[in-house]
Image 1 (cartoon, rainbow, N blue to C red):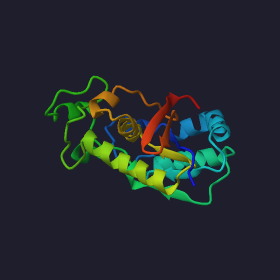
Image 2 (image 1 turned 45 degrees about the vertical axis):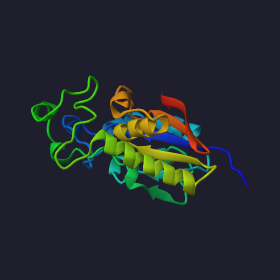
Image 3 (image 1 turned 30 degrees about the horizontal axis):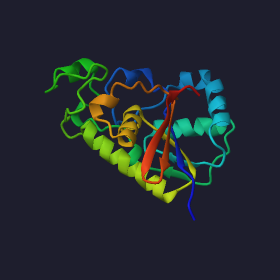
Image 4 (image 1 turned 135 degrees about the vertical axis):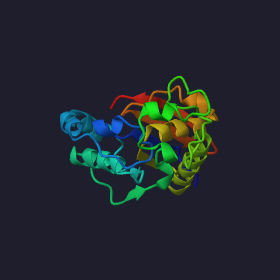
Length: 207
């Protein structure tokens, strides 16, 4: 029996702490900004009302993704029976650069930085990932979720870099191209898997 499209609701986590924002934190497990969590209660209520009821939920292994999901459950979304922890949804691993300031990273680049990113998509941080590798990882994760939950709605709480990688996978775009996309904290990006193809429904929508 055929099923309808599999819908993906990709949500970037909430704002992280000011100390973390002063660094290139990448896949480091940095905390959310507690003041923002309290101040933005209305946004979580809006997300709880807007996200599809009964959806499958997946989060990256980082606490800022789990914390964002928990804030939405606390705001009124019915907690799912299972919360999938998907390593494929984690942020780009920047290896030895993680925890450095942006100025320190600039002195270590081998390529000119992207106009809207601290480094080029092709840059290979020592011990980390290029954007091409992130696209391959996130794409494989999305395909696995689409196969395992065909015809369902999937909410995935992830990261800016990973959501850009998801767009690149869906559109067959380059890492350089998708780094031009702004992905806001708590912004929603929607994708649909139709048979063997992907469709972009919206990017970076407000909650």
